[in-house]
Image (cartoon, rainbow, N blue to C red):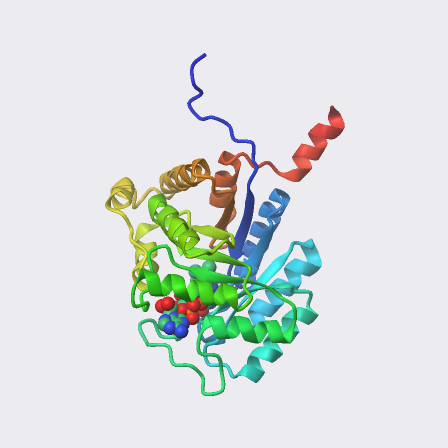
Length: 301
Ligand code: FAD
């Protein structure tokens, strides 16, 4: 029998979806459509980012509270140390806890102006590892932290960055979520290096299905993620073809995820950018099906 062109996968994966808090009514509606479209995939958790310099404090709170209230999905709130004293962080974290948040993505954060150097608040936390320890004193949160397959731009070297990841896990975090990357081998090398340093916590690859290279370049440059030449080439000539760009984006992300899957990766974190279709398509290609549809089929059998 010939090998199928696209072997189906059993869907034995766990996924999580990251959103950002909406700025106005229109983007709130878009976020909500996205949450409702992705919810039937039964993600392990969803998360909501925290704007640079704490600029979305209320909006992050409002968004996580609404997702929990209206969908019951396990929802993580991101939280950063930027421009906040320890008391202010306690207040925000207690607010999250009271709204039903049990999972925090604990980050150092970046200054509001891109390119500025992080300076800790005089009465605040100096690093994500310090924040993790502080949060554990506030409530028994489940905590995720950031990891960098291509090394954080401020780290002395890749070893120092892995040491820092270990400090964050030792301080009480239970998993790491990576910065986005486009070369699966970089993630796999990082996973091996981390394992060699005794890190056994799950490391979730951060998947960014890119349909606009120009926009992504801006973020990629700031966070040290390389956009490979082959990717630039794949989008050449598609500037005026947004639909074709989306199809190309889904193909690239699916190929990357299936490569990771073949290497034993079973957890995937999607940077959705508050749009459902690309992440949904990639999950579908990874074998996931909405729970309701599965139940309907079971009931019909
Ligand atoms: P840290 O882990 O504190 O590390 C920062 C740098 O300092 C690293 O280079 C590290 O190696 C170094 N370092 C730390 N401690 C030491 C030490 N003791 N000795 C030597 N070196 C040390 N940003 C936001 O503003 N809002 C968000 O919601 C947000 N969500 C994110 C989600 C994910 C999954 C990821 C990967 C990033 C996210 N970011 C977010 C970006 C993040 O805030 C930045 O990448 C920031 O520059 C670093 O944050 P961190 O938590 O990794 O910091």
